[in-house]
Length: 322
Image (cartoon, rainbow, N blue to C red; front, side):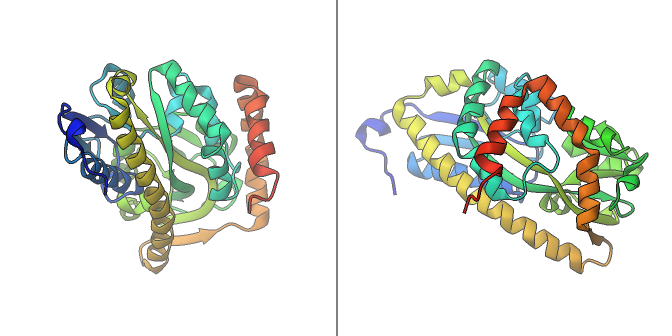
C-alpha cells in the first residue's frame, strides 16, 4: 500500500467533492465510493473525497455548470450530456445500434479515439479523466415494444441529446427530456409512457414498480466520462495528480466489472419477477428497428462530420477485436 512520506505529509490537505445523480448501489455509485477509499488510503488521509450521490448537491440540469464554476471538483456525467454543452463528437455514443458489445465500446473508450474525445473537453473547461460503462439500454413501457409500430405515439423519457431525440422520432415516438431523478415519478403519473435504461438502472431507480414490460433491445450504449475542474486539476502537484489518477483508473476498472455483473444480475432478477415481463427481439424485428433509425446517422454526419464515425467503424467495428 502506498504511504505518505515526510514530504507528502507536510503538504496541505486537499478536498475533492465528487457529485453524481444516481444511487450509491449503481455501477457509478460504487465506482465513486471505491475511488474515495483508494484516494484516502493512498494519501494517508491527506486527500479527502466527499461523494454526493442521488443529486444531493446538483442534478442533471446544473451539475456541469457547477463543475465549470468550481462548486465541485469532480463529476461523472453521462456521455450524452457533453453534446449539449458544445462537444458534439460525444454524440457518437448515442447512435442507435452502433455497438454490438462492450468489447467494441471499450476499443473506442480505451484507445486513441477515446483519448482524443477526452482532450476535446478542455474546450468546455473540463478535464477528461476516463470512461465508465453502465451498459446497453433496454426499452421499458406498459406494453412490449418489439416492433417499430409499437413505438408509435408513446412518450419516451430520454436524456437531452439531439441523437436520442432524432432516434425516438424516427421510430414514431415522442421524446420527452427529463432529469434522471424525475423519471420514476414521471412514469408513475403518466407524464411519460416509457424509458430507455440499462437493467441495473431500471431496478435501482424503482422503475419495476411502474413499468410492466421490458424489451431487450440493446439498442444503445450508456456510459459516463469522469471529469474534473481544470483550475482544481492544475492546482495539484504531480504527486497528488498521480494519486488521484491511479485511484480513478483502479476504480473505473472495478466499476466496469461491476456494471457488467449488475446488468446480468438485474436480468436474472427481472426474469424471476412476477410483476415485470421480459421480452426479446427476433432478428427481423431488430433489423426493422435498425433500418428505421438510419436517418439518425445521416443527420449526425451532416452535423458532426463523417470522419469520427468512419474512424470508429474502421478501428473498432469492422474487425475481430479478440
